[in-house]
Length: 128
Image 1 (cartoon, rainbow, N blue to C red):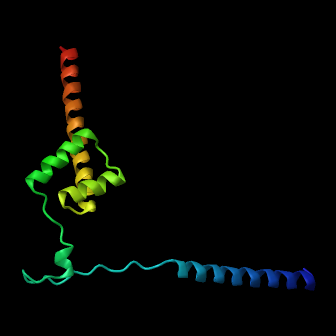
Image 2 (tube, helix red, strand yellow; image 1 turned 120 degrees about the vertical axis):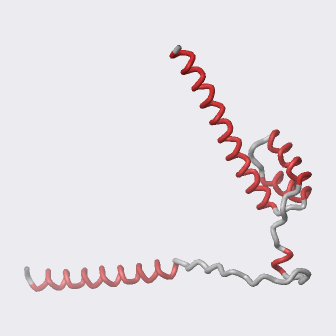
């Protein structure tokens, strides 16, 4: 290697390391740390705190019946329908969404169980 080629190799290696260093600095700046969730202190009943205002409400029987009726019509919620149903029931929209997700899971498991029993009966009848 001559002197000119050595100089070029030195420049290329310096440029490479400078670029790699700048890239890692940029990537580390872009990655944000997620805030840690900490338990909040429980307040005494009757204290009107923000926690109490945002507290998840338990679904009562009337609400459950209405949710079941809506589930029979359609198994998935659209955005407008979710908010309308949540306001109608006096629940948080997230609660309504989670209820529908859980209900779909139970419905799917029930459907799979029924299909399994049908296949089992068919298999037993063919074996006889």
